[in-house]
Length: 440
Length: 170
Image (cartoon, rainbow over all chains, first blue to last red; front, side):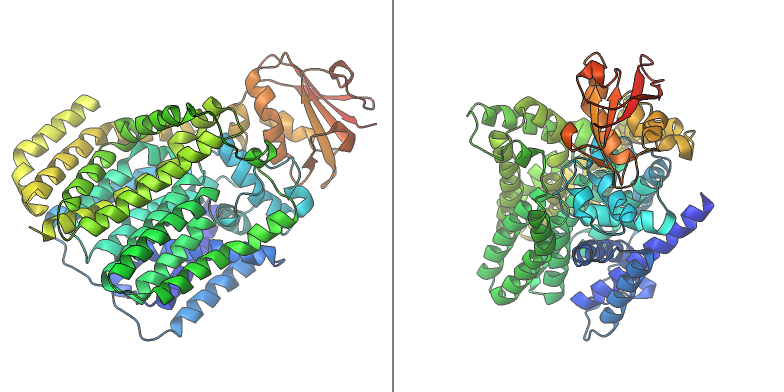
């Protein structure tokens, strides 16, 4: 175990170094003395970049051996070192009540980290969809279409970012390995500090950390994180793409736009529905940016790069006829109308369940209301409401058209799949409340 | 735990409600934040207790055992499943069949678990494409499958001690 933990630290240091490079490449300059700012957002930017580029490298025939992952991290760090000029992030002072919330959040995340350290991989989705793909890549030293197209894997056509991130664990400390849930869980552990880094110069720190404390405590996020499935990683990447994208809308910072693109590419590469969510987000941010006179040419380039990042795996998986349970059952088709109210009711029950989300959903609704009636917060409220509701509607459309048994499909997935839209809404909440206050 | 949370939340609102509202900027946003934080604190003891209980449950699991917990949630003996793979070479193909009398968890999930546990061997969905036949709870012949002489791999210790066979396909 000690050897594994040492390898774990080494592997994730590489991700962190890569992330610092990515931040510099996008135009941010994280300083060492501001480690608290950089560690969460740099780790997630590194995970996003390694996940997306690692997927493309696998398609190009590499095996993502440990030395190749190290080389990729060094390449990203070196590329970032060449980028000038850079923008230093704002760094507001922290008072005692905010510090208390930060400590409470860190304690909750610390307990969760211990849980992840001793967590076996027990959910069927973890060991039938995501872990087998990572294991198959290790055992065949790359993408082997014969193995991936066999019935050994459930949903082999699903994208590669999560298997690539699990691969970091397997390449650095062997197969089989019990640290995979912790490896994947790091994405959630890094999320509160990352979100704080992106919002701390835009919102009241107390409100921000109150929301982050609730995010860290939300039972469904803790349980899903311990389950080692892809819904929390998708939620993390999608929410950060939304927040960084909104920074670009507000200030027109190129750095925020590129950072949003990095996280959006990771969201697209994490789960199939990530592509739909990101498309909706891009439409909303593009419209809001155009209304504020932002450069849509730059936004189009960023969107094009996100699209391009998904192409290698999409082409490879189609060329080798990889499928998933929905395609195997004949694909989506118009279903009975009665599924819509039934699916909506299931979603609403989950959204309103305090044993899943505590009061996060309630706060997001109130924040939408307060920001929506204010002059300065109206656009943000419309963007947040549109992206969240349209994302949920897209999930409902899938339930409506599912070729699988409707009740089984809803019962086994609704709690997980709503995670990304809800976490996106929660991440935007401090901004909504700040804009509601600004118009007083 | 919920009662403790409620007491903590009430105390927080009574003692620090005004301060919290002021920290959050006052007005309606301040009130909303104070109530939200109180509700969060109310849920905190239960949430943290749930995670601590999970740690108490999972911490004693050995690394060796942890590899099979996924199988055990479906009443599948993970060590037995692992032994099935020994005679099948890497890249070899196999077909899985389960007796109708087996528990539904096993019938629904055995193929998926073996798909993971026996990698890089390939699971196929048509017995005609398989080099090996795996049967759980009955012999290949009892399940109507054409196969060579089956060998008993072992018995499932997690349910009815049903036999598990491996046979070369014919």
